[in-house]
Length: 441
Ligand code: GLN
Image 1 (tube, rainbow, N blue to C red):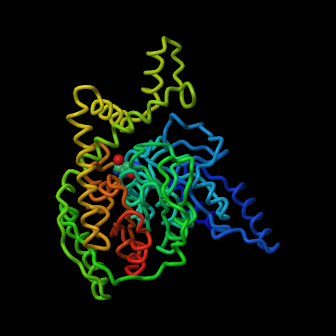
Image 2: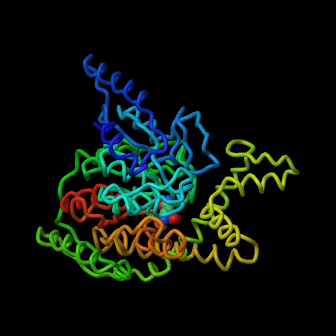
Image 3: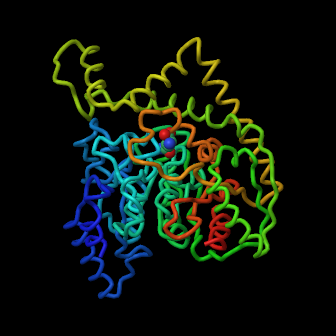
């Protein structure tokens, strides 16, 4: 059925960069056979899964939405992909994303933009727009995205599906193409909260290949039960600049939870005001360093200029990176350069520390925080692409949790409505936010 949906919608939506139908069908037959033989093929047996093209898949192209990696085929699976395969999941293809995951609209991909399946004139959000779009139109039952500053949650909200950004370190980044390594985290995009819990259980766990890995496997699915009996904090800074319709829809959702017994209080987290500029500096600085490896020597596109090394290196990168990637490499290099390091990068780190302390303090008073996921609804393709500043501003509600490493889940306010509400938990409190989300679903 998934392939029927793909046939019907893919032309309009462009959620996938690579599809491997034959391989997937073969895999499905193998699993069928295993079941007939009485074997247990795992909790994801036969489930068709889309993987964001920033996550490595052995023998399957992994382009990260970039010309640089357009022909790159990794020799190994990312930890998360390996876990999915071991659980019986079937990787059917690789989903479209903003180039090197830099963006919130999936318009910067070298392979063309993805369109919102709810309305193809609109953006699907980003950067994991292909993953969210595929799950939304039934082109995958589950998808993986990566979230450095909202890239799972923004498209999940815009495509009216569920997205979970786990605690930093709880899902291995082994095999994830690095953008901002201290912020990056892989997370599930699903049709409901139950599938988010199931997928999180499969992909999380300890992995010695990622030095920041810090969790053992747990069973969130088994412990999933609606829990409205909680105290929720509503940070006033995460209400600012939000479209009135989104405020109203998210408030309705919070009111419903209140009727079931939840308490809410407005709270103040002063450093939230500086989270976005600090995120921009840190993510772009890390990106400028992480992307230095694309020199055309070890892998990736290489200029045919055949000149001296410096010229060839510059031409290779000039030819293969898109405008947004170049912009971020330049800004990041500037922020890290001698003379400006203290003024920008170091200050951003101080804000990050303050924010972490304020979050820790807040979680002594509340079980979770709640806010809209995005300040506005999906807009038209092309409408904001030439205004990067306004796109960066749109990340204001999403990036704080990446800065402090906390988990956050977004669920749609209503079925097929492109508005999300996010529930943020303390470190490793995925169970709590899943249970709250379940009560709101
Ligand atoms: N919109 C954010 C950015 O452009 C999202 C990045 C991400 O989470 N990969 O930086």
